[in-house]
Length: 488
Image 1 (cartoon, one colour):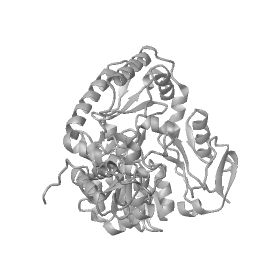
Image 2 (spheres, one colour; image 1 turned 45 degrees about the horizontal axis):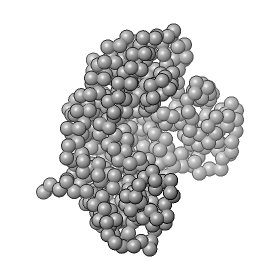
Image 3 (cartoon, one colour; image 1 turned 90 degrees about the vertical axis):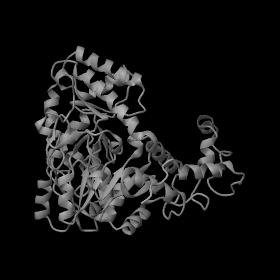
Image 4 (cartoon, helix red, strand yellow; image 1 turned 30 degrees about the horizontal axis):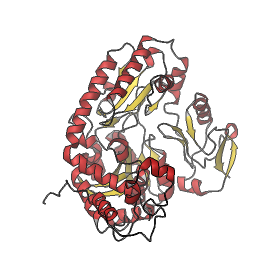
């Protein structure tokens, strides 16, 4: 099959050509190429963005039924990333997750998954009507959840009925990715679809050898990627890949996507995906190779400091069969006596740096080609400060270990049944035994602590109150967690 011309950017070029023409818009959007744009935004953003902010129409294309530039752009992306087909999205990886489960998990079917899924998976389960079965996995204070091994999945397939798919988050929020080879073989032998949320790993296919293999290269059936997280597209832009030799029906997938697509998809987001692919095709691997080398230098400098350690899967038997995302840096501050939350406040207030996330034991950075050298210099200076000023051991750190993986509550109703049921707010302290009707997740990273349909336990109440009291940010109907929504 002849290679496509990766120097082209069909979506972006279509917008530029239309904006350069003399056609006057007697159609949406209402800002009319910027003439009716808010003056303050026009001053900040300039003129060009308004001329390129076009709707779905004959001159552009339609994301639900593409016929022109979007077909070309998505085909170019599929070729570059090694997919059978790629779909552009403007609703982030959350949209991709919903599409995967709507496609692969019909109502009443079982989906095997670890607990460290994003809260968007709960929403997708409510839409699809599928039932989750949570797989046991290891968890470490150093790096959170470990990957699920093939033996665990095989046991679940032997004991659970009506399993339609296995859903994995890879890499984890701490950058860990377990090798997928055995899991791919198992899923194919058992005729079960493998769905991978690779929202934080879109760059893996661009990085040099030695890091985690991308889920597409490993043979997953469907893979969600947030290109805005690490590849440079606009926030909210993402893709959903159908793997080569995937067993997913492409028409069923497109039907699921059409249920979720907006009829007013942002062509600015779509053009950003197209332009990112064009650039990566030109010199993406060279760019990421340089960046990985720079990150390794920073890690070596931090590892040389007393009490600090950058997470690495090498020579750590606890992380057998795992590899670390080379651009996600997890710095353990535990031996300094500091906790991660305090270090996060220090680097924000004293060094003007914002990290990706922190926990009791670590601070986590997402690094990439766009980082200014001064940012890495400031972070190293902050780590030198922490190393030079150790503290007494934080007693709460040890207490926090019990919250790493609280017992998973019993599922009394399916997520769809509970999410759509009539609910009421009750005091959290008096909610034990009730069936939760909402998702409760602590950010970052957004893993559900409770999901609709689960029966609330005293352990969950205690752990939630402790995390909230420690300053963790909670996503819930009542963010203070004074009350919780339960099925009436």
